Every structure is written in C-alpha cells, then in structure tokens.
Amino acid sequence: MYVISEQTLDSVFLSCDKILKKLHLLGLIAKKVRNNIIRFKKSNRCYVRKALIDADIDFFEDRIKQYEELLKVENNQNWWNDDMDIKQLCKYFDRKEITIRKAIKKMCDSGFENYKILINSKVVISSKGAEWLCKNIFKKKYLELLEKYKMELTELYIEKGYIYDEYFGRN
Image (cartoon, rainbow, N blue to C red; front, top):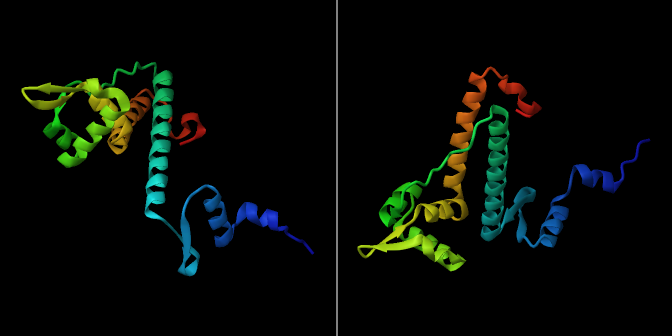
C-alpha cells in the first residue's frame, strides 16, 4: 500500500483552511465563504491586482529588451514628447479631472514638483511628468504602451524570418 504524507499532499493541494493560514501569515485578509471559495478583502484585491500589473510590466520590459538585443534595434520609443495640461492628461489616461489632480499631487509629494508648470494660470505637466505619472500611477496605460511596442517588435521579428513559436523556447 502506498502512503502519501500530508507534506506531499500540501505541495500539490492545500485545503481552504491552510490557504487562509498562509494568506494570514502574509498579512492578507481573506475569509472562507460557501463551497470553499476564498474571498479577499477589497484592499487585498487591489494589492494583488497591482502586483500582477507590476509583474506584467516586468515581463514586457524584459521581452522588449530581448527582442531589441536580438534584432539589434535601438530603443528610441518616447511616448511622452509633449507637455500636457489637465484636459489633455484626462483624455490621454482616460480619467476624470479629479483623478488626474490627485495623481499630480502624489507626484509633487514624491518630490517631482518641478514637473508641474504654471502657464497662463493653467497647470501643465512636462513630458517627464507625464512619463512619471504613466509609470508610477497609471500603470495600465504604461502596460498598454509596452504591449503595443512589443507587438511591433514581434512583427519585425517575424518579418526578419525568425520562427516566432521557437523564440527562446518560451512562446
């Protein structure tokens, strides 16, 4: 008779209670609801979502770097060439004015108040400020830009005759 230890089972399958204990040790608040479904507290879901976006950004930045090295392409992507006022930022990030103003305040509080300029009594954010906002506050927009650029590199990769499915053995 073959006996499976509890530790072996835990490496493959964890009970709902054990998952909750591990999450609690990580400082995440979760509770068990019907049918062994784990529900996270809203703030934890935001934390997990942000961690996933950061992981996606790291993945795309890494993949872009690999493509650029392989294709011998220099990264001259600059998505933030112009200074933008509040209305332009609202349109660019697809956010409400209050959200943009809060993000600008967060940028200034982080020590980048020099990216905020007053021109004719209008708040204007420099191109460097728009880049900071995109990379630090509106990460989904940054991820979209990275995905688009990666797809352009992928098309170039395929045009050069490389086999896409065998790219580094990972696609």
